[in-house]
Image 1 (tube, one colour):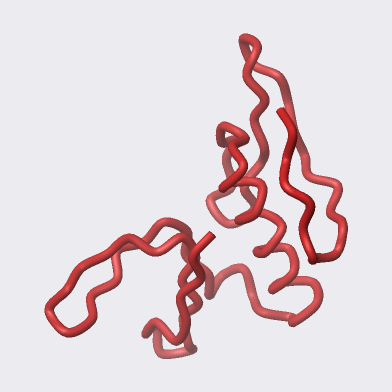
Image 2 (cartoon, one colour):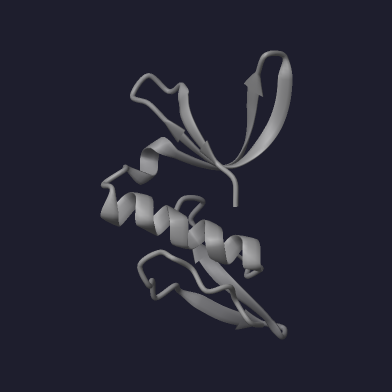
Length: 92
């Protein structure tokens, strides 16, 4: 599978092949996930936030429900503050 070229630092993602499907290890969820172009972008951005911007993995959520003005939506990455409230969402 061809993955998109990103304007982010290169990351050596941990991958494995399972029954012909490539999986990538998600460092926030701590499990292997099917490697799709969206997951490729998500994992690179998580690494960028953690290693380049020093954002703690423990304050990140992946594919979380966020409510805003009585609207609920799933966000690809949610960055929480120290009080556990969402401060930023990232869509991949």
